[in-house]
Image (cartoon, rainbow, N blue to C red; front, side, top):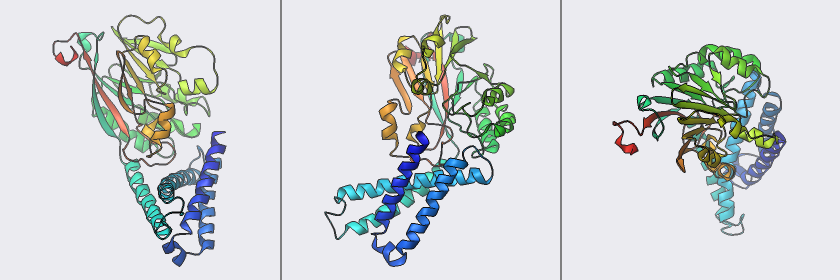
Length: 373
């Protein structure tokens, strides 16, 4: 259903951009309508073939998919710019003399924004620093560093070289604890085994832990095996006391749970029977955060939203996920949503690059942290 809707939306954007581009004087004088139609059909086929046959593939198939998804993003940005002009001019009913020229400027703006988004999408993720005070955190754990990555979407693009670079970036932060917040893999299972050496580059004294996202393990069951082979432990609706007084809990992806109508209460199951102390919850989707706060979670870490990835798509994402990116205070609980370390679909971002979270845990019991009092 998602794929069908996506193809329909892209088709409508193709027709709309073609229609408006044909009315721009600069285009009309230099490019025939026939050429525009043929080029549009070719680009639509690249997207369609990539979506239908390139998903999870390798080699040429993966490249076609990437090209198609990048073209989808270009269409989205160009459509947005054209719509702004059309709404402002009443689709040409007002400012008839200048409307075609303004559409030409919109086409130019769409191209420039797309180029900027491509540059930002290809840049390495930045490190974003936080300090989080936790009342129940033992004083001997004050100053421990937690590093979180989300939405890597590693497969063919990006691949093991990109992941190896991210592991080196994490090691440079000297973390005490590393967590992966889901959507780690993209593509067919055959490529996952190649990622094990790069994943083994992630290490920390308190371990490397992961929760699944909606893209993980859906094609085959080897995603879990890949993580286990790399020494990464997966938390699915369970908790573990990684140090006396510090509980790390991980819940299944709540978006998938909701969409598929699964029964039960995974959040309650995840937190049941835990010992007293500080609680950090890993949840790929930033859902049920108010319940998590009521259940006594001190810090909730999530991903999934990509921060909207390409402006202005974030405004639509926020309708479903009010916690879009960054830090939020929910009662006594701190929630931090990572905007994604990698990208999904197009290798493009607007306006911000991907990120890695570097969180310093502070204890209210420690004398060296007066800000917690």
